[in-house]
Image (tube, rainbow, N blue to C red; front, side):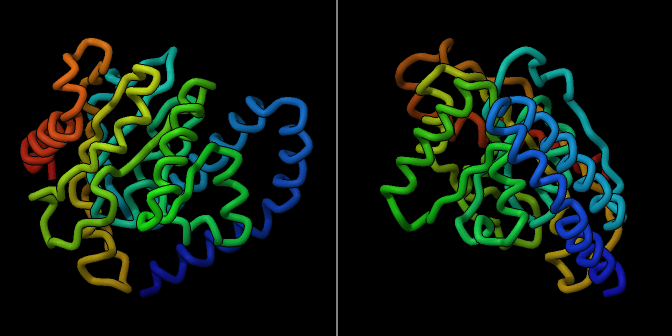
Amino acid sequence: MLRTLLLLIIAILYLILTLPVLLILALIRKSNPDKCGRIANAMIRWIFRVLGAGAGAKITVRGLENIPEDQTVLYVANHRSIFDIILVHPYTKGRTGFVAKDSLGKVPLFNIWCKYIGCLFFNRDNMREGIQMIRDGADLLANGNSVFIFPEGTRGKEEEDLPLLPFHEGSFRIATRNNSLIVPVAINNTAAIFEKQMPAVKSRRVVIEFCPPVDPASLSREDKKRLGVICREQIAAAISANQAYL
């Protein structure tokens, strides 16, 4: 419990103490949105690293060479813990926002940081919001901002990392609208940090693997319709293989 309280205090202090930074970024954003996004991403990556270290996460990262240096991508990953995005986001490249449920977009100050790094929030039960989210995500990719999404749609509640929930094929339309690359991301053992013994946070070994990218432009029309299946199989195979690193 002490570690949990420490992380909450760190997060709250960060949001309060960086309020002047948000005001400066608001001014920068008016004339240079790209610069605002780059600064915001750097700061969010920093605080996420601090929170990961505070949680005692021992992280092994594989496949960083699979992330392109010169173009935006759609990251798709399995989802088991609230720590998933905290631990993975620092290893993404360039401006990268994530897709999350609308309740996170209502957290004061945090929601402003999310806006500046290019996050998208929507109600999963509202089809119209889902369609708009796909359009907005495709626009972000087209304008230099990568997008990170969990296509299972919600956190898996099982004790183990496998089996994965089905991937929502609609999530992949964010990439197919512009034929953007898709980078599958396999995350091992994050639920062991918090969800398996909440509210306590425990130090655990975590493995993150960025798998080889999938290029929608190289796929047949039929395979484009089953991108969720293709990426799910790739992620499941990586999760299984990475058990050896835990």
